[in-house]
Image 1 (tube, rainbow, N blue to C red):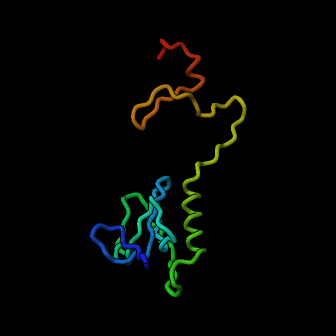
Image 2: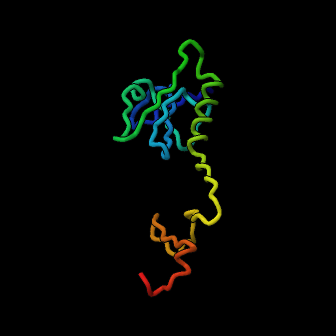
Image 3: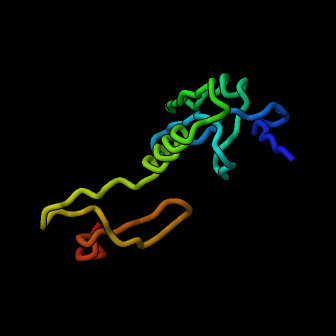
Length: 131
């Protein structure tokens, strides 16, 4: 039994030919050839919805070239897409700091939703009654 992947858009029954993924850290939407298998945070799109794709204001859309001569995406295309997404998701490297410089890290003292209050080492040595 051949299972054809369908477009992720609601009520669209067209076969998927592109895969859309987001790199939130870079505010980028990446549209590339159909991935070899379904990923949970990616969207499969038909040609019409891929062509009409727009991104939110401030975001960039990267459209990777798709080979039309072959029988689907090549392994090099899929590997390049996966590498680009992995690289964008990797946390930034920490800069080396010289001794005596504050490193900008501290201890979390309170959390409310997605916000955190962080006290640095220097704040811990101050008189708590002083602002």
